[in-house]
Amino acid sequence: MNPIVVIPARMAATRLPNKPLADIGGVSMIVRVLRQAQAAGIGPVVVAAGDIAILEAVQAAGGQAVLTDPNLASGSDRILAALDVLDPDGAHDVVINLQGDMPFVQPSMLAACADLLGAYPDCDIATVVAPEASPQDRSNPDVVKAVLAMEHDGFSGRALYFTRSTLYGDAPIWRHIGIYGYRRAALQAFNAAPASPLEKREKLEQLRAMELGLALHAAVAPEAPISVDNPSDLDAARQFALTLHAGNHP
Image 1 (cartoon, rainbow, N blue to C red):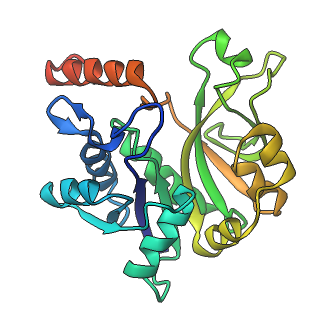
Image 2: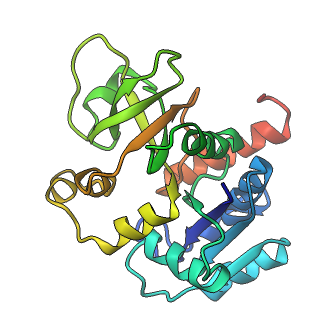
């Protein structure tokens, strides 16, 4: 395999405008994500930037970025646009899609996606889950749950479904984390397809892939990373950065 990590980012976030450039402990969020991806060491890392300000911030930090059309509809559109510029011949057969709002994502999560694609030839898309953070996760529609057929080692599983609905029973609830590793052909097929019925019903785009017949596998991470979607999330990220600076977090 020859993976590449692509981070789609744009300024026009409705709940937190200019989110990629939000300052977190003296470092912009997009640069923090970039550095975490680089630390994974699985391949080159590029930011698919929807705005010149993002591109300039990444380049000023020594990173690589490609300017994409700000009017592109989705992150996967932005990723493919960047790949058309960087790798038109398809040398990178695996694409890791890392969201630009996870400033402290564990590098091991990206490596786990690449490892799953290497370990399971039938896997078209790899992703990540983590245990529920609290009992309230089970009924919270904002927490996306993954239903998995677990492997015997308990560290990964084949995805059967994803839902926002309440899940019952005594089995663990796996909280989905929006990191994806695609085989290049799977990403192209996913992006070319229209939104599917289940995707529209659950408002979960990974269900489009499942309805296309693509196989998804998920790796189990110890905990979910901080994801910044609104001002309170940003406050939490800034507080976490302070604990890192003080050496109070492993």
